[in-house]
Each structure stands twice: as structure tokens, then as C-alpha cells.
Amino acid sequence: MNWHVFVVDTYSYPVHTTKGFCGVKNPKGGGRKGLLYDIKTYRKGDYVIFYQMRVDESSPLSRGFRDVFRIVSDPFYDDTSVTSDTNTVLGKCPICGYSYSEKPDNDGIYHCTNPNVNPHTIPTGQHILPYRVLIEPVMRFDDPVDDNTAYIDVEDNGELPTLRWRKITGAGRSRSAQRILPEEAEKLVRLMKKINANYQNDSLKTLNYTTPQMIANKLVPETLNIVRDTSGVPLYTVKRNGSLADESGLEAWMLENIDKNIPVLAEIIGDLDELEFWGNNVQDGVGGENADILTLHKRNGKRFKATVFELKKDEVNKDTINQVLNPEKQNYAKWIGQLVTANCNPPIEKLQIQPIMVGFKVDQSAIEQIQNIQNNFSTFTNEMIIDYKYRNRTSVKIKVLKPILLSYKVVGSTVELRRESYTL
Ligand SMILES: [Zn+2]
Image 1 (spheres, rainbow, N blue to C red):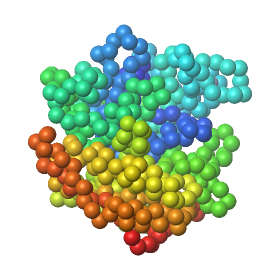
Image 2 (image 1 turned 45 degrees about the vertical axis):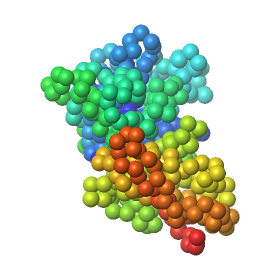
Image 3 (image 1 turned 90 degrees about the vertical axis):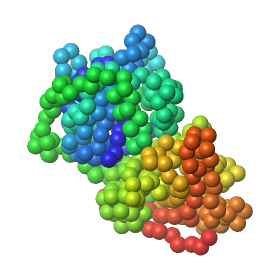
């Protein structure tokens, strides 16, 4: 069971909830290509919790986490606008028809990004969100869980470790979505029920604005087949040698295919029934240290392994290994280990962490650096202890497994992976 937090504001929340869909922006390119990660992580049956971000300071209590919906369609692309009462979610620019999403200026005014026409703004409170999934309500609550109750209040046990750093109210983070850990979802649902003693069952009616039949020919293409709408050029550029021009293509492809039985990847992911969680850009440090992709695995009701992917468009080399695994630079086992064991339910006594590095090439210097780290610190044979005694929890033994090194190559519209063998 996978959970997402989906960010809305006071204008878009009523449209998404009464018309039964979530939508994300359409990136033109550059750094915004990462916006498509969200759509590549949605699966039918996943759950969505809304986070209503603030628009101004006037009503702090009307923002926060609210409601649980279930995703009931595959992701699709639809540029129609959807209106509920006085609010509208757009599928393209209402003035010029441009399909790429608007950009805010420093004053919070949203501008159309079409370079070929006279500059114009998008009406207040409207956003261009053509990448969509259909949703249906599971639980509706009148009052949102405000930020202080969610992040600060220690009367409720548990924390929101993957959400706290990116603090999704930040301007640059607005209007995005992310997967959250099962224990984070548990906490948010628990708080929603606590705050809303009168649990609302009667407002469960949501009429989807379109139907699965209507969107059957609008499904989002495979990652490497997504084109820039106006030109037909692939959004994710593949170089002549089969490498990707930027890392975002590799990340989007991995997210699309993580549960699709792809050779090599499927062996690493293992039994899909044991795949408890997967998500991308999971931050585990104040300095912005993050796992490109994190997966969690559960067996006999207990979490037993975390797999951490580091993705490189070019080569995996000494620097890659150093950046992630050198204990003199960061204590990988400790921070990743705490992130996924501190609040997990039920508590566990031991956890394996499997590091995975993926690049177009695996340079020999990467293997040598792994061997150096092992020689100097025994990182891949020792265990470390995370001491949770102060929380009345059992301490957890963390074991970092021998890193797996993968090389990739784009072949047609897929990515072929190859595992490099080496000895410690
Ligand atoms: Zn426009």
C-alpha cells in the first residue's frame, strides 16, 4: 500500500476533491523535467493525502494535511479545464492555448511561459496541470492537520522524517507530490482522526470529471517516448552512445519500471509482495543529502531491508562512491538507518541497507574505492547499532551490504541494465 502527499491550495483543493482527480504540471525541459517523476510514481490503488499549502497568512488553520483518496486510474494527459463553482484547474493556457505550465514571479503572479506571444498572466488561483490521475474518496475530514500538529506536537508519537526537510509549503516546492513512508501515512491518518472527532462519512460523493473509458487514449507514454508537445522531440534526450543527456530521464524511467519485472532491476527489487515502499529524492540529512530512489522491503510483517539507489547519467567513479559511502564524509548507515527504523511499525531489531550505484559506465576507480573503504573501515562486513533506548524501543543493528554496481544503456525505448561483478 503506497501513500502520496499531494499539494494543493485553497483554489485547487475544491476542484480536485469534487471532480476526483490529481494533476501535476507539464514541464518544458531543464530542471523542471523532474516534475514528471510524480506522475511516474502513481499506481492504481495507491492512496493520496492532500496537503493544502498557504496562499496568504490570513487563515493559517485552513492549511495542512487533509483527506484520504485512492487512485483509480493510470496516469493520463488531458488539457481540458475543470471547474467547480468559482475555481478552475487548467489543462493549458486559457489565453493562448500553450500547453506548458505557468511560472510564478517574485510577487507570486503567475505568467504564461509561451515565448512566441505577448507576455500575459494566468488568472489568480488557476494552474496548468494536464498530467492527471483519477481519484475517489476514502476518508474526508472537515479540519486539516496543521503544520505544528503534524511536525512539532510530541503528544503524538512518531515523526514525518521525509517531509520535514522539504517542508512542502516552500515556494519552490509548491504544487508537487511525493511518496511518504508507511509510518508517516499512519501518523497523518491518526492525527486527522484525532482532530476530527466527527469523522465525515456523508460527504464521500465525488463525481470524477471524466471516466476511465474517456481517458483510454490519453494515457501517459512510456518515459522515453514522451515528447515535447510542440516539436515531437523526446523530452529526455538520448545521446548517440546510448547514455541519457540528464539524470532525470534515468530517474523517471526507474520509477516507471521499478515494479515492472525488468531484467536485473527485478532481481534487485525482489519479491513485489515484499516491496513495502518506494520513493524518490528521499532526503535524509540537513545538508540535502538524499537517496535518488529508496525502496523498503518487508518479510513476515517486518521491515528487513532498505535499498538505496544513486543514479549517474555518466560514470560511477571514485567520487560517486566517496560521496555516498565514505564514512569520513557521511555516516550513511546511521542516517538512512534512522530514517527508516525510528518510527517503523512494528519496531525491528535489524536492518540491511543495500547501496546501488547506476551509471552509463562503472569506472574501475569506483571498485577500488569500495575496496579501500572496506579495508579501512570494514563498512560492508561490520554492523552498527542505532541506540533507541531513550525512546523505549529496541536498538537496531544496521548492516550495509556490499554495493551493487550497475551500468545502463538506452536501447530503443527501454534501458538495459548490467551488473558489474567484483570482489570486496
Ligand atoms: Zn498563454
